[in-house]
Picture 1 (cartoon, rainbow, N blue to C red):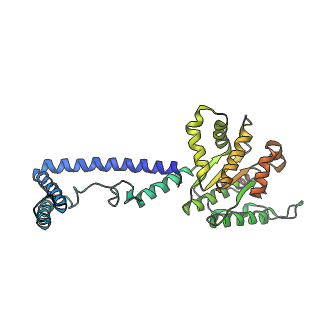
Picture 2: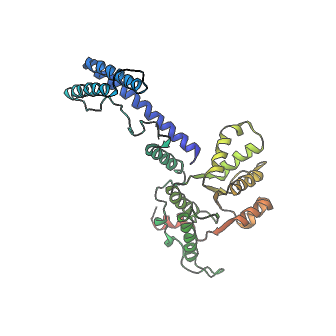
Picture 3: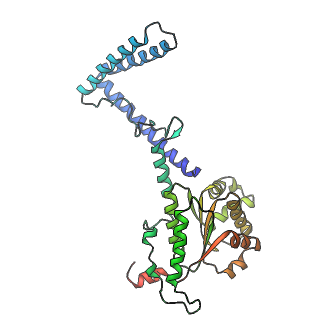
Length: 329
């Protein structure tokens, strides 16, 4: 699990718990003000519970069965008073959003399903920058937006080529648990790189894996700060690096748009190397051609990318322009 997202889920759960405690306090104050006998009964029940615990340890001479019977009689009278005044039987038993864990998020040390749902919510929010349309799925990927006429140079139609790319991405996502490869999406703008990244992210996330989407500029700047020993590297940058390093799948978008500042090449090498050493999978997308990448990055980086990543060239014409021309946007 992503530690930052889990912390966010726990924080939301704690907010829920605080609200539940406030509501429980309000209910008791209301009930005790209207029916003072309820306060007395709750005090007697609590005292009997303590005595029963002491009896179990040999500290109270009264038989446990006798104490339990007395407690049951008091609870029955309490239930009568609640019903008589129009309240449910469990109205004073805690206003928990999740009675199973009493809003702690854990049951006997195991994460409760309510906290798991909050984690999934946090993960979906974290991917919102990538899944911005809400429709990014393999079922909505439209191969009809690619030309079916053969390219005069390669002899292969863009649609046929992208059908193969789609198949690789689909298989990659569905078999993420067994797979080991990294992907490098290469091609001009508007060819579907981000869309297919989002499709993979959605499927992999739904399988329970942690997915982090980040632009190359933001990710590499965090690494650059660490390498240059900037003060912020101990704060937000360190937290981001931890997420980039530890997530099951990292989607690094728009490689090549980052500023050519000092330590950027070293930052990219560190990021790529950290992921490889940790055996964590990565998808990188770039608009740069192979020649442009070779000019921009060091031979060590290119060796890592070309040797450890499956390169998928994206071809065709700008999909956004095609959709606009067809009145699809």
